Length: 159
Image 1: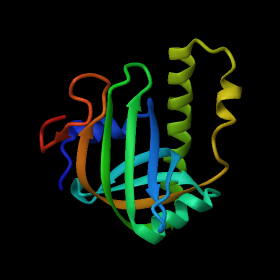
Image 2: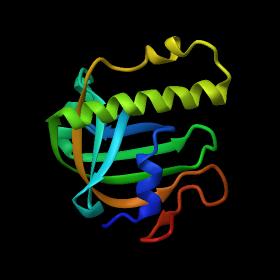
Image 3: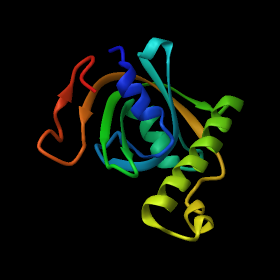
């Protein structure tokens, strides 16, 4: 599946709360926070960052290859979900770490502004020390924005 520009813009924006769902070999689900996102290879693959010390999520990604990533706009709650198959789990490179730093800054600022919190340092404590890159194919996209269309599958150009 080739991802259109609207979906790409949604996922690559920094003011998104991102959750990566994985599935263990025994069928047990796991939800983990994702820390940055980028489409590559003409929109057919994506690269998402997850905490390097999340051994369960990483083991799940390697064992089953099933991955779903939901990105919700902090200020508007507009949300999309990608489902796909893992190609690889890799050490983060310099570009990943730069993306991680930018994402944290933009995400924490969006939470600060939206929630009117004064303690950005407290919010920032949720960030992992390091990340790994998950490279996966994008097989399907779903609207997850609260409302009557939540859960509906999007085709090319629907975002």
